[in-house]
Amino acid sequence: MIKGVIDFLVSDTFEANILRDNFIFKIIPMLNPDGVVHGNYRCSLAGCDLNRKWRGTSKAAHPVIWSVKKLLAKLQEKYEVILYTDFHGHSRK
Image (tube, rainbow, N blue to C red):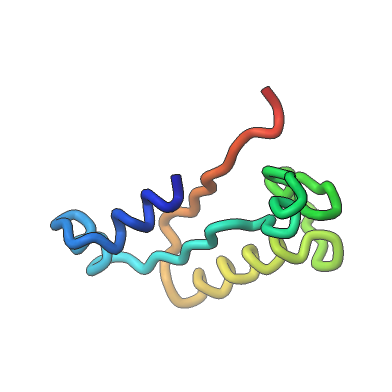
């Protein structure tokens, strides 16, 4: 799904041009590449569901989430962050 979003945003369509002219996009295509390599969809290599660790994040235990939160805070100092969205699958049915 994120590939489709990226393909659209870099396209020559009128809508994509308007979006690029008016917004800055920061895209993190995958938060858990270490886990995915080992067959996990949402969990890190340590078996931690990163989507459930947004609150109470530890730099040592959840370095990726900690870094994303730091990036967002830094961006918010200079720009108005108006949207943060997470494209992900579900670990529960």
